[in-house]
Amino acid sequence: MTTPLRPGKGGLLLTVRVTPKSSRDEVGGLHVAADGAVSLAVKVTAVPDKGRANKAVIETLAKACRMPKSAFQLVAGETERNKTILVTGNPAELEALIAGKVNAGKEN
Image 1 (tube, helix red, strand yellow):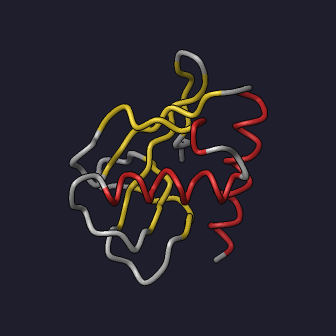
Image 2: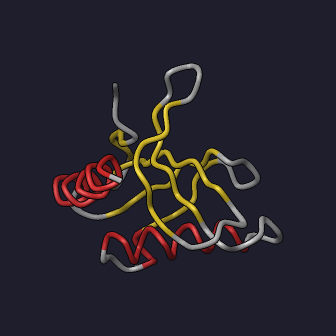
Image 3: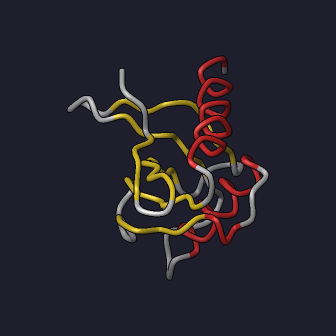
């Protein structure tokens, strides 16, 4: 199994699979697609209308990682379930924070 993280310019690129209209906002474990692609599962209560779900995804990730929302930027998949988010900052620290969320999600 691979990781949803890969190096990007200025930080890390995080692949997420979003479930909108969920019962609560939360970062789950890993999602493995049929083609083997790995992403971080993120559930949000917002509807996918006029960017509301995208905003909620960034807020949920920022809260879960205890980072400012400004450290997260949607770079691909604006209208898709699968999105790529650039997380800026120190790559080593970001990997540790996000890996902790991934590992915590595996236990659920």
